[in-house]
Length: 460
Image (tube, rainbow, N blue to C red; front, side, top):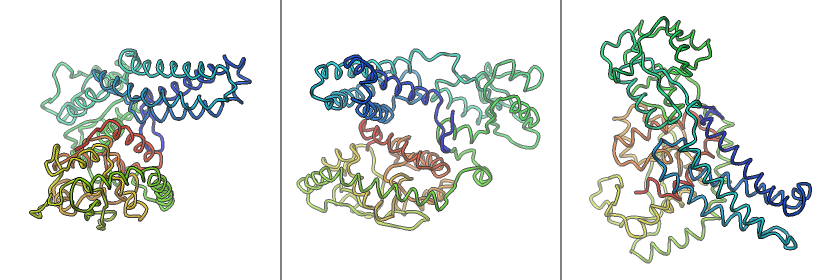
């Protein structure tokens, strides 16, 4: 993993992005150079077209999730995403290179060459992701611990990271009963450092359920780190691997003395300027969609087009969020707040469509301009649920240290939640965002939001 502006990115994903971007540039410039007789003539003629298309392809591929480190067995999902990329990228390639000078007799050949190259590039990405990943590139991980915490770490790695190889578990001195499979337990031959070197371990994850005095061989762990082996505690491991901060093994001291949670004036100012510019642009671009949506809502049922509801904002201050009305006007006629659920009978026909496409969220862009919300941040909840969740979930109030967002890290990483358990799961992603938020992470969230909208992921 590589940390870029506080956000962890897989090395493999980063290499794939730069390789594909370079290959797209070479294919496009090569096709034009072949037609015009040389690269010296191709660059002045079509350099802008090539760079523009490569940048668009990079955004499309990233938003589609093609660079995600997907678990094995998700071939169908990868093929579906590849098809989605092609449906967008091929017409775009045809249009951009159709803008080449009309006196270029081979303009059509350039268009179809680039389209063929893009198709091959996308198919190669699917192949590399699922069949060609070398086992030698996998990270060899030793888990120090054999209790429930170690079991959670091991199960998580096996489920979400195909590039991780668990070499085994080493039980801590105070762990009498193992929760992990017995055949995966390692017996130390010599010191921990010698065992790590013998097994060619790249990382050690310290996942002890019991952490009383004497439970960790601190000197040996330090020797491993000095020998170039990466050593992570359980919370840092989940932050790095899953982009979340687990609250079941979280202590307040880790939050206080660790890095992150920087809410400086400069960062706040940059985020605010970005919010204003982005919200203004999105309002202009989505104005026709909002107009059609308003007319459809009005035509289907009586009642207001917009829906205003009290939510809890930054520092716990209440504000009125604005959305397109997607439910019947008597959705809460008994006065009791309730979460929306899958196939909710209160949702109208138009409401079902705009929820799936996230169009109902568009009026919140005006909340962003007003300053109540940010473009990216934890989703704002209703006061009734905030009071309940604050009492039941540790550290829930931390998410209110930043402005709520129209979209967020939790929204693109986890499906829509309608229970306390779902809220706890999403909080773990919100904590990661609050700890590490930067303009770079906001851009990552916005890119992934495009993919969420196109695929309908998490709609309710």
